[in-house]
Length: 401
Image (cartoon, rainbow, N blue to C red; front, side, top):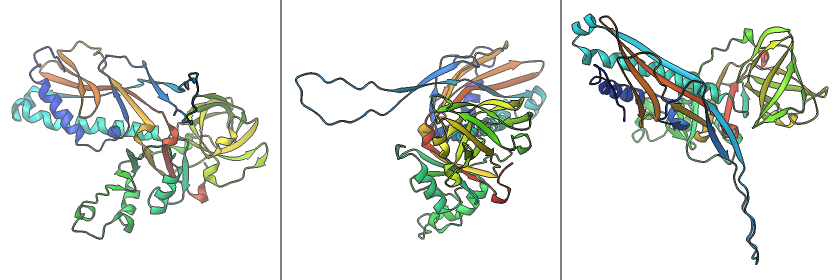
């Protein structure tokens, strides 16, 4: 329950109600991942500890006069940093408000725009984190655009992933192709006319299909090109491996989170298998300095080359488009209300149970102008990489940067 103080205290509840309603009407991925929205105030950079327990073993019962020991649960203790503090800030001029029917008529439009902006930002953050999965499927088609692509991605998903809460997220190119596939259309058009009339795909093969704007604005000019080499064994940290890579040129090139390395050689010998079995994913990037960089990689198909003594050679793939299937437990999103830093006329913190997110709203009064600020303090992290699959389109004729 929010408590507000100041001259605008009576207005704030209407703003919050409008923002919550507008936000929930957007296509947002926040509802597709694990969510931890707390009410305790926090500061940017704080760590929220999250534990993930490994499954326990089932063994046959053996009658005995002595009490058998229990199994000690194993945990992946991961901390999620509140690394993002984003806000939307807009102002209303008194003359404009007075001349346009008052504050009640002006606020809905501004609030709707604020909800759009924050929803798009959170979607982009979640898509960026989905790139952290180690499970990569390479294709020359629009990703997940054919029935076979989806079947192959489903096979790559861990069998331990729960059967409920599965999503398929893709861009507009894939959506346009899917809507022409007979497997996704019903012959009973009267029963499901929305499929034809509205382009709604809905649920298929146990997945909720969600077309969304998947960013394709990758600047390949700053990516590391040429051969990337690294000695192993690497240091395992959780499910990631910290490695020191060497590459040319000596500086100015970057490894970004989500970059895909294709292992071509191991100990000087060409690697065997198809491309899908030879990939590593960068889970923590860095910029080359003096020809080397300390990065972290997550094992995909090339997991067998991590933790084995030797040296591998790899290249960074050039990505044209991508899509994802995942279970909602693969990622965890945390949000906490942030304490206002400024001197505000009115401020308050809200936990929105409908959107399952904590945000802070502030109102500041200036000279004949009222400023409105809606901020969200949050972080997210891939908790179970094997519960997601990334389908990536590449051009075989232009395979590498």
